[in-house]
Length: 202
Image (cartoon, rainbow, N blue to C red; front, side, top):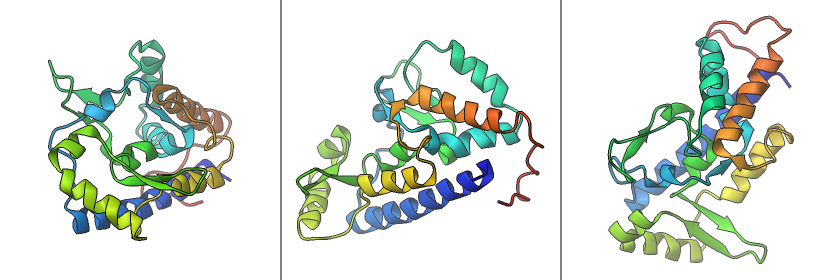
C-alpha cells in the first residue's frame, strides 16, 4: 500500500472517530475546558507512528519535513513536539497542528477501554471529572446500560489493520512522530514526489 493510500485510510478512521466524538459531546454536553492542555504536558504519552503519518505527509507536501525532523532530533523534552504550552503555565496550551493530531489525542477524554474481562471503562481527564462530574457520571451510566461511545481498543485495531508495522507499536509520542517522518522520507527517497495537495490519488 502506498503512503498516500495509508494516509487516506488513517484520515478515514479519524473522520469516523470525530463524528462519534461530536455525537457524544452533543448528547452529553461534555467538552474540553477552553485553553486547557494539561493532558499534553504528560511526558509519557505514547502513540503509534501510523497515527502521525498524515502529519508527516503534510510536512512533506509543504516542504517542512526535513526542518521539523532535525528539530525533533535535537529536542530534549519528552513533551509532544507539536504542543505549544502557554508561557508560565503547567496547564494551558494548544496543539500547533490540531488538524493532524494523533489518534490518542483524539480519543483521550471521549472514549472507553475494554479490559480482558470485557468490562468497559470511560477514559477522561481529571479536569473534566472535577468540572463536570455529573456529565462524566451520566456517560459512565450510559455505558453500563449499553450506550455506544468511541472504543479505544476498536480504533487502535483499525489503525493496526492499515499497517501492522507502523500501527502496532506504541512509542513515546515524539519517537512515534519521528518514525512517521522517516517512513514518509524513506518512501519518497527513490520515488517521484507526490502530486500537489488536492490532486492526490491512491
